[in-house]
Image (cartoon, one colour):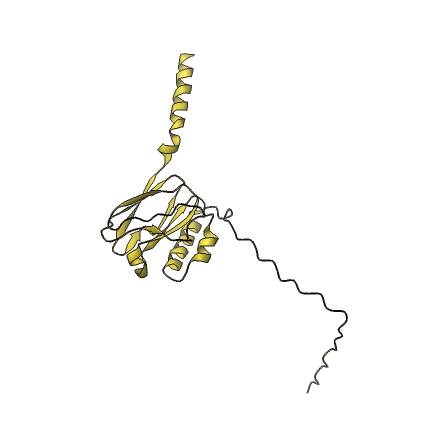
Length: 176
């Protein structure tokens, strides 16, 4: 009986730490004017760490992160760590080098805001990053059926014809 209680107590003790022990750390390295890897797939609660940042920073791009997610902006020339708990696609950039295409994407769990990110993506370089993100999502087999879609625009309803007006059919043209 003592061994059963000990075993049960051990399981409960370990279970209380399971959330923190399952979180992973993913490393993004600044290489020249690029982040490697460009797209990182993580789970909610995982951390992402940017390293080798001598003349770079990392910051989330407004409108290209999940709704109500906490944005971030690191200081220049310092490694940086962020923990992401909200599912979705996060597009980020190096502010001084985004014109050279230095940005990336993090997909946390299911890409629930993918359509919103696609719609928000202005021209390059974000468009390229979003395209690479879509490719990585498709390749990984992530569930895109849970993607939050915008409300459909109602179809245009044509007014009923006015019964007081008369129409005359156009005469057929004579064929040669």
